[in-house]
Image (tube, rainbow, N blue to C red; front, side, top):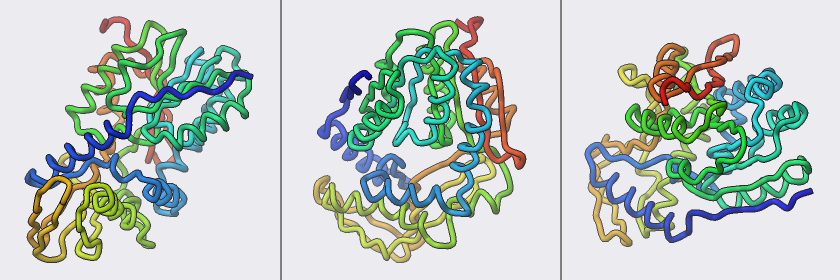
Length: 327
């Protein structure tokens, strides 16, 4: 059995600089915004795990069922020697795919990438034990900047699951997908999980559950700012809101001020005023239509080979091949 390895390409100082820049820019803009990556301290990760078990939150279990049903088809079609997973977390859903790919015979390397060093360290240790024939090599980095440093050995499949593509706006998506296509050699593939446009009530409930777990998750970003940047947000001054934006076809999560107030952020030496009803947009989660995401992938340089969805057509699992004609 190979020893698992961990390649750290982002330092605590890098993360701190990124946080400071994002908060200074986001809270100084109109409307105010914060990137969703700052949800995920230890408590935020715990809360998101709780969210994935909620009755209202269908994306995780739907994607998992699609992976379980089609892992053999994916492994056979991709015939990958290396699987690279962006934003891998615990790699829980991916294990069914790894088993199928190992059984299929070509796979020899798994490269999980995540920004959380602690989560990744635990995952690679567990995975190396579970899959002793695989070389498991973790990369600690931000997925939006990870592509140039991804390993290029062997026939590769890049997995980007969980609907995370929807956290990017259309310009960011085009840039990201184009970079992915450019990083793959002939025979390379992309396995992509995306939320699909479905009933508005269903989509909104997934991001605003009756038990308030998503509200606690949303507000946790304020706790992160209080602890890491010396801010003095009172969580009770803000309410969680999740609404469908029909023009852009995405869910927006926001934290809306209940009253006029000013927040101090000591480490940035700024005072941030809020009017009653003013919001911080903390996340977008775009939902896709089959034709739309197929076109986005084609523009980036991919050809859709397979597109699987659940009976209610709420989530899509896409296997796309690098289109040789576009390079």
